[in-house]
Image (cartoon, rainbow, N blue to C red; front, side, top):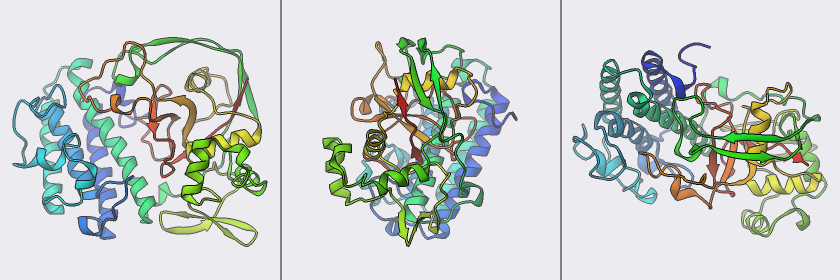
Length: 398
């Protein structure tokens, strides 16, 4: 693994420098794709709850790195920064804690060129400061945090491009066949430790403190549910049969007037799908993506299975047993997003705590997740009705 793809959690100064530069290059390349479609102007970006105006998002990414690294803030409190922003109104524009989502379309932001200049200036100063840091977890924490933050926003920009139907880089639009879709793996269960600083390095606050948990014996799919398998569910009345849907899921389905996953379209005897603005034939062996938690649960009910808990998923992922493959799509679990006992928020106080008990845990990674970010211990989380992410499912049983 090259240094640029080494886990960000243990990245040393030179690895971090390379990764921070690569992340910024990638972010700017996606922004340029959006700009080419006219989405660098606030007035042309539709008001959608699941996206940010790309110009605001680009500025926010740079502001976040400036806040925690250059301004040496130890929390997100408005008075926590040790010095002023490079932009006179940087905090007024780009602080996600104080700038509500609905107002991000009405801000008097700098021009795209001005925001890009800000991005370059922040990164140059970050990289310069990094050369003088000690190679310790404490000293490198804000750099690793800023890198993780930019990688997550980079993937979110791809969600935006999919939502708006904007072409994405070719290497991110191909279909990928599922791995052993019809097989399952049996695990004997046992006690594992979830989260915590087990190997040093960076740890997200929702992974702490480490929590020991017993996992009962279980069986889990080796691969993700495929389009072909999901199409069987649809053909068998999966979207019409209320037995498969929870009360919340039924309400969501009625609201959405949905009869198939987002972006699926029926074309004669085959299914087609819209990917980044391009209509193509749906590959049967590809993992089904863009499904909500409700759709995932309904499929499991129809199949006589269930979603794995996040502990079961992690047990399988770290077991080393051959056949279990992950990293194609984020995977819904049966676990609500809850704090570990003894949880305390870290410097980025709004990262986890506001979302406990309302969001659901997803595990794994997706094809759009940088390899340096992927970890079998990472807890992703979204509202159960979200289906714009690159998310799928695998099933489980006792």
